[in-house]
Image 1 (tube, helix red, strand yellow):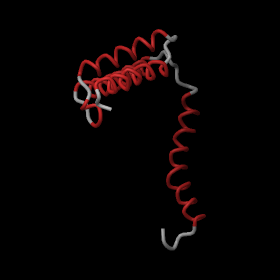
Image 2 (cartoon, one colour):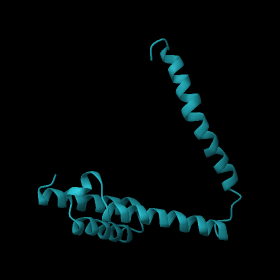
Image 3 (cartoon, helix red, strand yellow):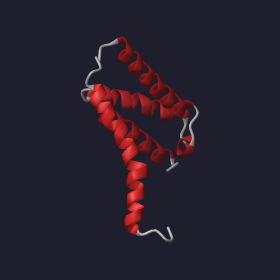
Image 4 (cartoon, helix red, strand yellow):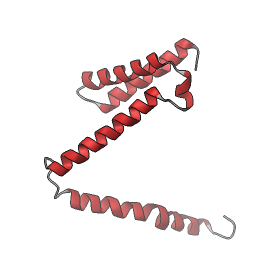
Length: 115
């Protein structure tokens, strides 16, 4: 950034990157308090979000990219199954599900000699 001081660069990041995003977060909190979680609209939003997440996971398993390409389908499916089991075993903990699935992928890649 020739010609810009460090302070100017920080101000640019704050005004262009941080503040516009923060405005929407604050508005979401303010208006979110008035939304009934059991309303039909919120059930629809939850269903769409769940469907999108399921589609992303299915795509990662069935049509992988990056490092997942080197892993066989049975290992990717096993990691998803293990992640679901970990999620259910530890009181519906998303963190537990992610850690179990990741551990299965890492150990499986190491065992197969892919890592």
